[in-house]
Amino acid sequence: MTHIRSEIIGTGHYLPSKVVTNDDLAKIVDTSDEWIVERTGIKSRRIVAEGELTSDLCVNASKMALKNANLKAEDVDAVIIATITADNITPAVATKVAAELGVKTGVPAFDISAACSGFIYALTIADNMIKLNQAKRALVVGAESLSKITDWTDRNTCILFGDGAGAVVLQAKEGKGTNADTGLLTAKIYADGSGYEQLKTTGGVSLTESTGKLWMNGKEVFKYAIPAMAGSIEAVLGDVGASLDDVDWVIPHQANIRIIDGVAKKLNLDNSKVIITVDHQANTSAATIPLALSEAVEEGKIKKGDLIALTAMGAGFTWGGALVRY
Ligand code: UT7
Image 1: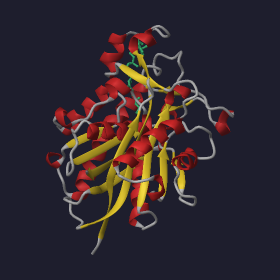
Image 2: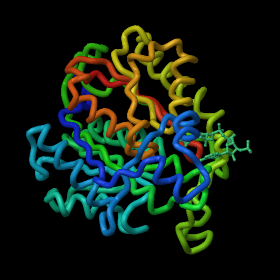
Image 3: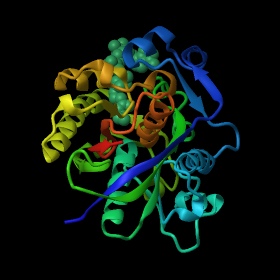
Image 4: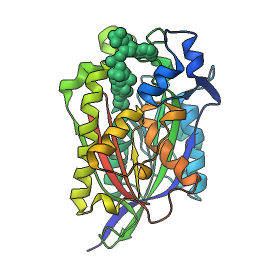
């Protein structure tokens, strides 16, 4: 029997050039570099420039991913963007990005809204499209301009977020159906709407006819995140009969170093296998995983054949995990 896998053949990322340090934030809210580093592990974050849009972040990250895949935009036959900060409420920013990149007319392009878990949701959907032969090559992007919905007067949240984008190009590849195949081996996505109020924008189209600003019950989200993320890694490993010893790298969603350390501790995972970007990027929601993946590939940490576990948790609540043989 032929097994189709979605292989990652190109990765890319883009960060806005403006760096905002903890000391910069201490000038606008009652906080300190010491508090932020100790409680979150964040030292700095990138913020979009005036007039720089989420679509610009997507286009830059996608160009790098396409270049690394040795492809042109016209070779892509699906564009999926995970974001909660699209340029407009409608249309989907994916349609704008596809047009700006030069993707062929008629190719489907749409956004996914699953907050910090958005990239794993988007990857899952793209993989299913590839397996159903609805696409041979998909561009999957996670991108956010969270600075646009950050409440810059709220020290509980404004220290946590950043802007950026990461992208991957997926391509159908026939495999044997074993864990040695390159590509996405398995993915699982979950939601629990009882957490709806715990992390949200204070407004919305139908609620207030405005976007509102990010608000969070940090402690509740924190408590939920560790078992959800650790559990999703165990679930994807169980799916393919692999163990953590088989995994070369874990890329967790980057919200808080204490959450990442908590997940590692719960799984008895060696910290040296965990990719960390939260220190210099903060929480870029749907963008953290593809950003970290692309940076780790660029730095030569992740090599062909490595087994990578991805996990994320965020607003909704939503969460999920994936296993990729790079
Ligand atoms: O993508 C998934 C989303 N998840 C997340 O983004 C993160 C989830 N939650 C967290 O990361 C943590 O809960 C936070 C970093 C948000 C907060 O950390 P914490 O250790 O839970 O702190 P806390 O909320 O219990 O606050 C402790 C104290 C409070 O003062 P009192 O009431 O003890 O006097 C806060 O008012 O720290 C105060 N505080 C701050 N102090 C200085 C809160 N924010 C700040 C701040 N600077 N920025």
